[in-house]
Length: 216
Image (cartoon, rainbow, N blue to C red):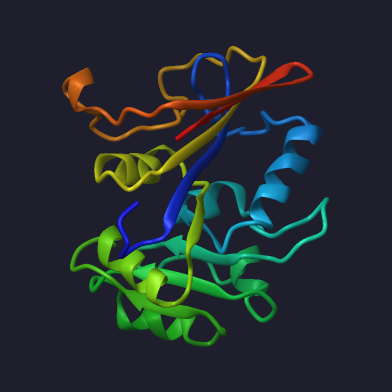
């Protein structure tokens, strides 16, 4: 891990064929036991990071429930500042620290709309959110560990820029299929295996009908 940025853990539940959601966006892959495990993991990190599309699709709280523990800071990548103010993340920002990372393309109207809530709006990048400056800012804000719970596009941006330090994935017993169903990592993809991110298998854990793989 570079000293200028937090340690990033990519976390997800995937089907046997590598999908994180069906073609209609249904992402209910995890068992109750795995959900509890993820919430315990959330309680141990400083921040959770997702992209705007995850908010639009799932409207998550990104809080710690099912177990005891602190709520991490929520960070949302939203280049245009378009996150709905009625979303659970914005509505609970009075109680839980929330950061919305935008680019310079975010309109004054959107910034003013977000300004009515106690969220920290961080501008990082000209046309889209630039991850490295954002992570440097988060590091300076005492955020040392980030749980990346993004969709395929956000995951690709982190992987492509070499910003993932650990991967923890739960393999669930489903075969989803579908050419338009979202996979763990989307984007352009690497042209050669030799150029892709290679990690070392650290731990394997069986959890009833699921398998948790931990790579570092």
